Length: 446
Image (cartoon, rainbow, N blue to C red; front, side, top):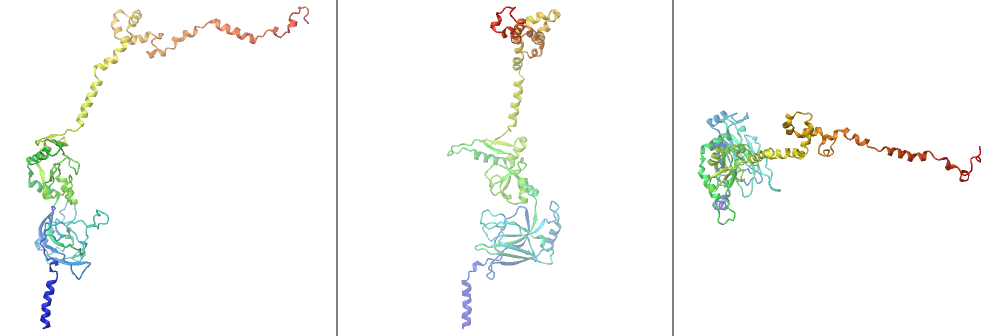
């Protein structure tokens, strides 16, 4: 009797266990599609990395998949097709991790302390990203993992994947394996062109909506300036595009945007720093028309009615002002003011100059003398003191001032000699005593 009662108690105990905590093997999880990969086949569907009670700190789970002969052939013939001479495969076996969420397609996300082994060989994981803040645990950037180099390219031998991770409270991860074909940025640009070009009228309507006066706003916007330069490469746009989720009119170059995301996929708009996925990119037809019409303009301005006008560079305004400067310097009034006044000043002495020169020149050369009066005046007047401050040529004539030195008074020299004669020739009477000066000559001895 105890045996049946025991069997009845076990089901009741099993019912009390939290069975919903055990995740399903293949949950309804969808991975977000990657723009640079086309999925050819699903090798392992998204499978949950369920936690086991036997292993508290590190969980480990094994997965097995096999390739068909057709899949092996596709991988082998795609070798060395990448640009740059790298030995790789265009058709790859791709391993992806994500959170077990079914609300929307999931992005790549790695569990903590992840360790992957493919056929017993350790697969190197990408490095850690720098932490955004101090104290925040570092996380690896979520990316798909290309495990083709460690996979047995044979349909006879299966492949085994060992996954080790550290469980997190309230988080469950899923793993999946795909056969994909890697794409290049030129191919994605071609697909973007094939998607079509947005009608220019759509952009014009968006311009009118932006420039419509808001009655609640005190400032009315009547025009909108937009650059024709790509914010990524600072070069002129070739394929103007933007995301439909962006609210700005400024475009960026699609070719350069795809090249940058091919090396480091971020898919962030360079204008507004918001998500700009490949699926949401559109080529603006209005900007294509503007680029074709204006080849020498880097900026335009949109009007309220949707029309646009080019914003000419400031270099042209500088050229106009520089052309007007030499016209002012070469104008006739400036030359007349600098040439006419000199011959007008010695007009009173012009007649006397001509009278002195007619003695040595013919009377038929009167016109020539009048045409060049300043030169002849400089040659004639040498001793004129009036022209010394104005004519610098006269300072080079030293013989003019020689007669002024000879104008000396001869009595001045004699008077000075007479003054100096007394001290040098003293009188003998000054040494004779006064009593002896009155004696007669006969009394004077010897």
